Image (tube, rainbow, N blue to C red; front, side, top):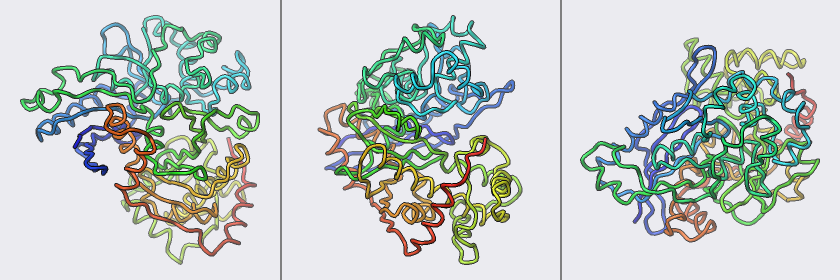
Length: 497
């Protein structure tokens, strides 16, 4: 029997999860949950990472009280954001949130220095203005004095591993999200960074997934039982990017499957031995991110349940306090017409917070469709539109890679939205296998087991996932003609600025 801790940071919440591996079965227990969220200060959006680290220590103290001996700890997080370090200081400035407005216009500024095609040929990363490249380019332009002071940047998941171990490195899967990493050479593209005025001194050492960083630093958990609980604990950089950890924890087998990591963002793609850096991949804005073992996660980042989360936030503020499950049940009622109105979730207005129900209505109005007015109608519109975007992405993946994709493995908290899962099967005409919802934590923990020699390989890791968690199957429904007509309508919808 072995015990591990996953520190799982998401855009809305963070969790300290205890994983127990016993006779080929994995059991997960949430020990501590806390909000993450953006801090609005001085007209900017920031992450309060020191508060988040205090929450980590609270979770570790709860584990210590149980007296359970812990073999390993590893952090996973969203990509692109970073903390600047200087000397022995825990941070130089409060790190920016990827939704901060400072990167607006970042494409034009960067492409004026390095052409778009060259950036893609070098990095293979999907173009999003929130990428680290545009954030650091903004730093170089607007606060060069801060970069001059900084010793290095450390990405969010790696930052918490650094606070726990004392080693500030970049794990390969998280480094690959920056659009400053060369997936062929498997190292930073310092020539690209130099062209953009980003100092080479800032780039930390890149380490492969499942690297043992060292023991837990003493004194971080002031509890009488901590000395026993964490006596042999190793801090491990598994896959520091949450999607890479989730893909490792996806129970797929064979080659005819794609994965969907479904949460605030939807990340849909395949595993590949090599990157796709073709003009077709660039035209479709696919990304080549690193996975465990140097594999390539060829995927597209899609605005996911963020739109629905923002709608619910607005409704709660207005006194409509239904849960997500209640909202989806209302949307699935026979009185709510299916496929009546659609949005294109990639439109710019849906990427920004605030007023989301009105933004959905405005899009439908601007495109000459019936305007949804009730929460149920809006939820149905958002969910079905997202499912149609999944279907289009699967078709694009097949065309660009030549793969035949017959199954979609959906993981993450979004699989609890059964309306979305069934719509994804209906829209794509493919079987959707949903589970586990905790794929990120499972991947994080089982990669710790691989790093420590407790599990031999990725195929055996995925067998443990299949043996430990229930998968729910969603088959395409009978309304094929209606969904095909909706796919045609969706394909004609504009992506509005």
